[in-house]
Image (cartoon, rainbow, N blue to C red; front, side, top):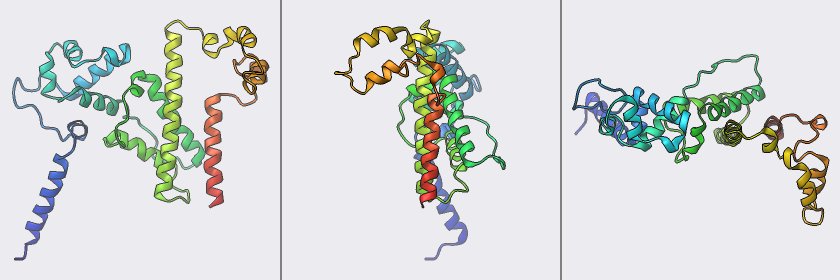
Length: 266
């Protein structure tokens, strides 16, 4: 029995709808595919209100202070009211990440070369950890699957648009840049939080303990660390002698050098 074009399209649509129905609840909500609450007063809350309230709490007090009850209380509702919109705390965390990943970026930068575009991408990603310190405390459980997270992937891939690379090579470079941005962002976040808690920058760099370390660290026990420590480089003791500048920028430039070398060797 032959199917008509209309029947075939209907079957295709049913298959697509079924595949969309199989999406985890948090991811479905991020794409606007979640079902709206059917019970209770209409429009008493919205997903955006709940997510914004959760982000405000996490920004001020960290993820440890975040709970569905706490978010509900800040909005003047019960926790059960929230669950009608967002099924679980894990879904809420995913939507929080999604919300703060909504970053505007220039789609076309004709004068920027690929190295500068990659620098900009890494800086944008690092800034998220500075503005929202809790962002890196949420474990990575899959590749990006939500709209704004995918927009960041698209931004990263745009830096490779004119490079002679395969799709697999491009994605590996995106992973490399994203991983470096995440590591640097989390390190900088930790340092910023330590300073906010009252720790001196000189204590973080180890400068306050330089004299003591020079007595404790011996050449016999630490043969390679010893000369670096004695030179002052380990604790940034002699900043005027620093010829490489910012450690994070230096590391990024070496990554870009490696990518450039790889491209030229192809």
